[in-house]
Image: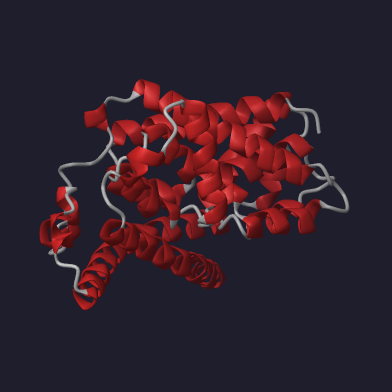
Length: 306
């Protein structure tokens, strides 16, 4: 009964922690769909992929979102015409360059490992740029979105957003636009929340079942310890505003490299946003994103000197 109670507490905390940010994300997505012309981002976006990725980083700084909330925003921006590498860079970097996350990391590590905030932010930006560019090189245009989406959102959405046109904006009546934004937000929120609940349930069960002592018996093998902490970050699915407080408890118990790996991977990919990604994008694209994140986080965390 105690384990069931622990699972319910963790599950509830994950849902309540993530839901407001997801709500914010789908509202921003709906506003972008309704008010931003289709060719706006094509006109302002730099042609150079590196400069474009830097713009994606800046977008993450000024549109701060958690790892779940940023997915619908990034999807809408890509559908509006921004390059794939920019959208992915924005999606991966946003939960790390979020000013609140930076402050939380500094608060957690400023006294004992002051360089951690710079490593987390700087290396997180580097990984996001590399993943965005590599995925865009390896992906064809018809392998981006999950076109055969069976969700009610794509079948019933009356605002026409699934058609990727801006024809519905011919009517500029403000109340009608607000009505379309509400409909878009409601349908997308219901679609995403189902997968958030599944992901949160899996994460909460794993957190209770796996003894924490297992994570502390790996000091003899640096590679294995880093890998285990990456998997740990993936399965517990903490919000990026809270994971630094959990990571702080491992100081002097495991290597700083393992803590860095935990802090880098968690905001970029975890169980709950993996399920949301599969609902939003083609599965080939999702596997490329996840694979590259894991590879780059492992290599950088292993070789960096903290």
